[in-house]
Length: 184
Image: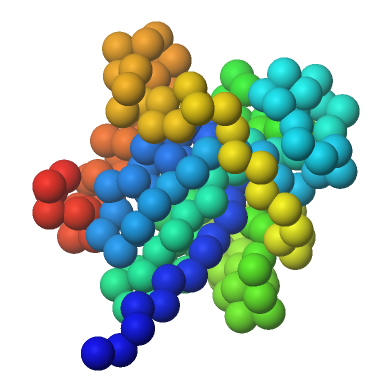
């Protein structure tokens, strides 16, 4: 029997609670962890990252089965659930920790990300150019336990009801054919 090979993607598009909640529901996604990456301070805490002095972004690290969902598919979802044209902000969330960022794990991911951004810019999907930062992956720091599966554990929390839930519902509708059977 052939050994299963999974891949990793690291993406930031505002609050990690939103991205985690959407990617958790996609078929082929094995796991999603919220955390911090793209900065310079080792072992940051949420408080450190929120200060804006660590350089880290709130990101999700996605383990996925490329035989079921590709990196390109993950980026299609990524660019549909956040605004990649606003530097260091998503809605009311402002700061470098909320920037749009793709931390690529290999040259193939970098190439796919560059091509996706170029295609979306050429199609004028947004009224402004994409400012998503492309950066080689270095280190991922897992966020505190209370951030993991935040939306699943706190669906009635006001931020989840107003910000996260609409993104999840939008993704469920747009990517209905890609949802895990228990979600669909």
